Image 1 (cartoon, rainbow, N blue to C red):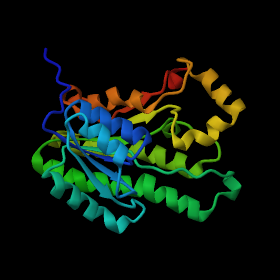
Image 2: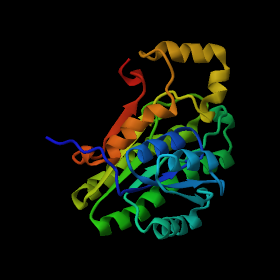
Image 3: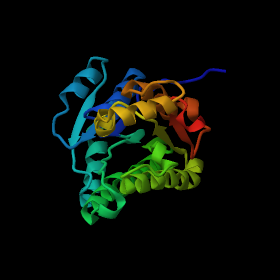
Image 4: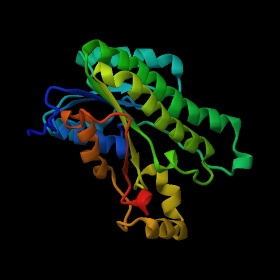
Length: 252
């Protein structure tokens, strides 16, 4: 049996690709052979661009504020126009706001919902139409350990990540028969800008680390293998799955 992890000739869209997990996954996809369309809040993504182009792959940049829902359709149109097609979508972009539940503001709630949920739904729907027309595609949403747990001081983030897991399964139910696989990756505790406030609290970081069976936090590089698997033909019979990449957290 030949297992095909190659992404040669494929085009992958990665949102939030400027740094962190998005950059790690973009580079991983490029290492497997894909050209990359990086969607970020900045018009320039020099570090990601350099890493991808050093691999001999093309890197296209699209600047977009994904909280502006009326701009989503143009983001999709521009992406397809730049590369001619899109085979893979990684919905990685997200924001987090922290506050006690009783003090969590409506503005913070709305901001997180718009980027982490509404944009994911609309990007999936619009790129999905393109993939259905082409008869194939891979959509990979980024869920979280908080797709399964409540967390502390992050009610909006937790709500969106629960919803992303549900959206993943819902789209998968409708589209797997149309050649489009929809799955999600749920990263565990990763060393990124989003987790900086937690890691700065030495006691909390130590407690969290003690609960990770592998004994250490993950890095963006740890998502390379999982995202390539879900983007490749190797996962052609995987649909509606939430893949935990967490050092064993969910099993502990």
